[in-house]
Amino acid sequence: MPNNFTLGNEKLWNRRQLLKLGLAGAGLTGAAALWQMLNLQSQSIVKVPPFDIEAPDDATNPMKMLRDFDYGTVKQENGRTIREFQLIAGTSIIKLNSAVSYNIWDLNGRIPGPTLRAKQGDRIRVLFLNNAGHSHSLHFHGVHPAEMDGVRPISNGKATIYEFDAEPYGVHLYHCHIQPVTRHIAKGLYGMFIIDPPTPPPPADEIVLVMGGYDVNDDSHNDYYAFNGLPHYYMHNPIRIYKDQLIRLYVLNIIEYDPAVTFHLHANFFDVYRNGMSMTPSEKTDVITMGVAERHILEFAFRYPGKYMFHPHQDAIAENGCMGQFEVLTESNSQNSVKKS
Image 1 (cartoon, rainbow, N blue to C red):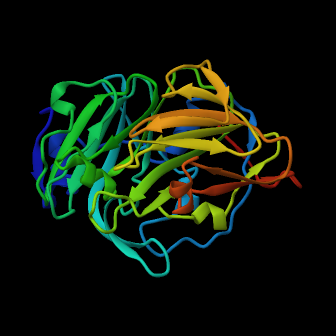
Image 2: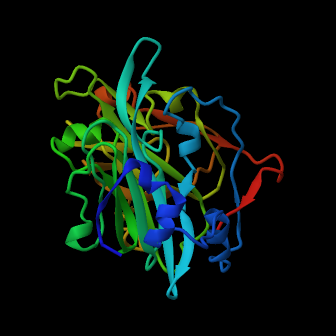
C-alpha cells in the first residue's frame, strides 16, 4: 500500500474502494470497550458524577468533550494492532456568546477535534478527508517518517492516509500545517493525541482541557478565549468531580497569537507530568506556564467539597472566556460509578 496518496471525495468512504485498498475488512468496532479489555490489570472503580447539561446546538459541546476519547477502529493485521481513525475537515458556525457568531474549520463537526487515543506500539492509520473549502493537512506530533509529516496540502474534496507507529507515549497533538499555519490552527483545525504507556498509570477520572483563542476581527489578536471550544462555559456549567478522587487532567495550550499562557488551579496543588512522557512527576505547583502547543498531564484530588476556579493567570485571557470551575461533590451513592481501565 502506498505510504501517502490522495483520493477523490467520492472514493474515500466507498466500501468497495476501501476493500480494494485493503483498508476495510474485519475490524473491531466498539474500540473503547476493547481498550478496557486490553487493560484488565487495572480493575479499580473510578467515580464520575453524572451531568445533565443541554449541549449547544453547534460544533461545540464542552461537557461531552471532557471525557470523550476516540479509540478508533481496532484491527489485527499481520500480528499487529492497527488503530484506524477517520477525520473529516469541514466548516461550521459557532456562537461564542448571545451576540457573536464565528466561522470555523472543524474536524468531524466539532472544535476541538476528537481526542485520539492509542497505546504505544499500535499502528496508527488516519483516513483524512478535506471538505473544508481550502487546502488543509494533518500534522501529528510524535515520531514518524518524513512522508507522514502532514505538511503536504490536501486539496478541497480530496483525501489522504497517514500511517505511522504510535510513539513515544505521552500527550501529543495534531493540527493543520498549511500556511498561514497560525490562522489554520486558530480557526479550529486541531485536537489532542494521547499515546498511553505500555504499563497503565493508576486509575483516575481522566479529563481533557484544550485552551484555544478566537480572533473574530482578523487582526492577529484574540478577542475571546475558551476551554474546549466555548468561552465561559465551565463557569456557568462547572465540571463535577468527586471529593478525594484522583483527577488526571490532560491540558493543551493551542492559543495562537499569545506567546504563552499559564494554567492555575484554586485551593490546591497538582503533580506535573511534562508532556506526559514520564511516569514520575517533575514538580508540584498550582500554576504552570505553557507555550503554544505545549501540553502536560496534571494530577490532583480535592479534600473539600465546593466550587473551585481554574484559569490562566493572565486576567485578560481569563476574563474573556478562558475560565471555569470544578464542583467537588461528596459521593451520595454508588449508582453513578463507572469502571475505567
